[in-house]
Image (cartoon, rainbow, N blue to C red; front, side, top):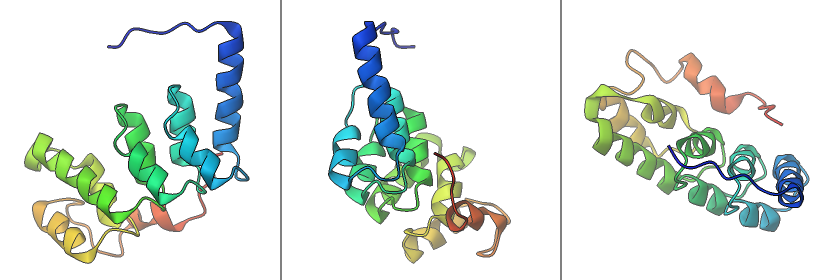
Length: 146
């Protein structure tokens, strides 16, 4: 567990303002790119959840040291294919056939290349699933995270 950082009031207020920016649907892509590298975890988390975050910033967020930030970037329908491939490969390397949390979602992501989707199905991701399973709803419904 990492050591908790207690920030002074002015710094906390500035961090909160950046969280509000990261959550806003009107925040410009360039600003979201900057927020993707913020030192404050909730800023990165809400940037990963923002449907306006550009693919290159989402790629960065899928490399975040915080697993929850990476998870939220995975759930964003704009996350690019190379990032999805990397997430699937990392989980496979770490857990093999014992755990498919990330890969179950990569299978259903709209940007997953078909060869990767097929190989994940063969490996056991979303076991018993078909391409019409309910898992697709994560990426096809209107998301209302903010």
